[in-house]
Image (cartoon, rainbow, N blue to C red; front, side):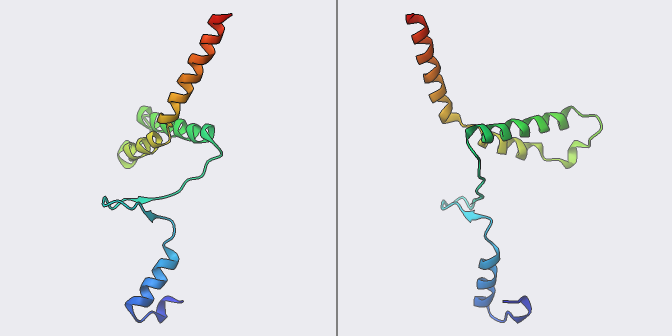
Length: 105
């Protein structure tokens, strides 16, 4: 459907729903939307978070960049979402199990 042929609100809603596919409503009453990001695994996801944090640090410590035009807070919030906090407990448990085995020897 071309935009110059839209004559009713229903046609406009159909047109818009066809094009607005990137964000999906989160389902709660907060008005937030969800954007899916795909990763090859926890390593890939965590590396992206680390790289985002490094980028922010470079901007903060750089004398050449104007930091007012870069919203470091929003980049850091995204990086925080990429840190697998709940899964880190599993790593701690594995680490404890490995240490127990080495102490038994």
